[in-house]
Length: 236
Image (tube, rainbow, N blue to C red; front, side):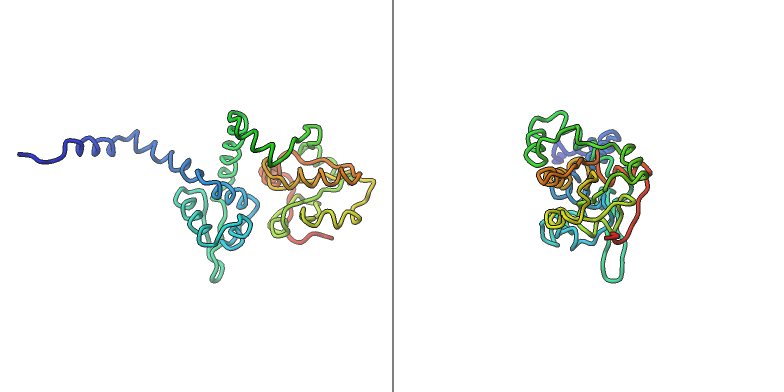
């Protein structure tokens, strides 16, 4: 008598089904982005390559947990790594990875009421009139009639920033308001459309009587559009 369990051939058939095998590969991407920490790591790597300790510090998690999340992202093809001496440096596999993240974020914001409520609680009630398009900002940078502020941490600015922007991390902004010419409008930017640094910075500037708006999107969108970028220290 054949004692083979009846369900074993069915399982083998499912595994051999080419369509299922293909869909399993697609599902790997969704699984890789199924952790809020991995979503944050992708957003951080969109600003520039990082070591695991820097990623852990910015994400507020342990180095061990950050390393585990990075391995999941690597296996899904979203992140690659290189050695720099004894350190391992991570970056996004290509620009499409950030595009995928923004597509997921935008879809969630447009279709899930819970996402809208969470975004409102985190970002505040942003006025669309405060947004400056990339095209407008490019022209204003050329004309020199706006101060462009990068409110991200200094290491993100050094890795890449809008050409002509000044580095002024959000936590330093209030103490350094006097360094900004009072008569010139400020355009602030940060990591992307779901980053709170620029909205908070603009609100602080406006409370102090300064004319300020924020860039529509953030540094990754500016870079993806092929607009002028620079690397290195801030000129001030």
